[in-house]
Amino acid sequence: MTKYQHLSAEERAAIMIERTRNTSVRAIARLLGRSASTITRELARNRTESSRCYDATSAARAYRARRERSRRQAKLATGSALYWQVHHDLVYRRWSPQQIAAKLREMHPDNPEQRVSHETIYAAIYTHPRGGLKQAMIEALRQEKPVRGNARKTLARKSFVPEELRIIHRPEAIETRQWPGHWEGDLIKGAFNRSFNRSCVGTLVERKTRFVVLRSSARMVMGGPSAVRAFSSDFVSVDTGIVVRATAGWRLPVPVVPVNAYVFYDVGTGVLRHDPFKGQPNNVNLQGMGIGLDVTWRSVTASVSLAKRVGGSAPGLGSQPQTWTWASLSYSF
Image (cartoon, rainbow, N blue to C red; front, side):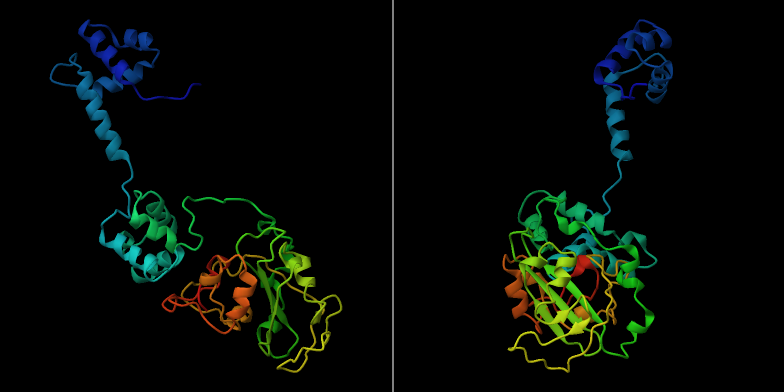
């Protein structure tokens, strides 16, 4: 079965000519290779005072008007009050489209006309005409990509984590932080995350004492178990679960505590359905570090930049709400 196509201008002209010759509908359909119902519907839509009077020009004009009405109108129309509110939050407050959409849902729970999804915001940005206004909105995005989509696919998008070892399945006793020895780690990658680049920082946080360990190593760039084992040589023996003072220059600010001999992983997922406007009390890996990734994320030497910003926060990001998803790691927390 061939794909249906709308009548063209030439076909409408042929219909008009044949109708002036009193040609039947079925004969016109055979002539054009169309269904008789298509011709009947076209004549009924554009019927005038005389049933046999058909004007191709008027029919084409009515067709274009119907097509225009059938198109879904943009909810985030340029120049509207909602558009400028989204623009202000995006450009001046540096909120992500996900944050803006969540805030609008919170502000207008009973008014869907004042709410938009993050995809609507992205569509408004990338379909905007070229110019300074569009450039300002693109620069406000985390990755500043001029077009949507992945520039490349790397091993960072592949997860080695079995479902039973995800961090959401760790024992409930760990959440209370009653005993030391439970560590939480993360791997933060900067720009150009390829095997020959060392733009990464590994973090290890003891959940009870909040003791933070930073580690930068080429072994961490590829992620996976090699990133975890990179801590073994200097501080933690991951395989045996024992903390050692392997380097003479280390001066630990807290007593050395044991490491439990099991590890729960979670790669790049975070708490995907967490409320983006409420803090995450159990994520000590993020709370124990004041890293402003919005400034250092695009640096080629992210490992050096991030290490220098421990305890600080990114300038100009104080108005951002807190969220603890992987997509939101560029916020100030």
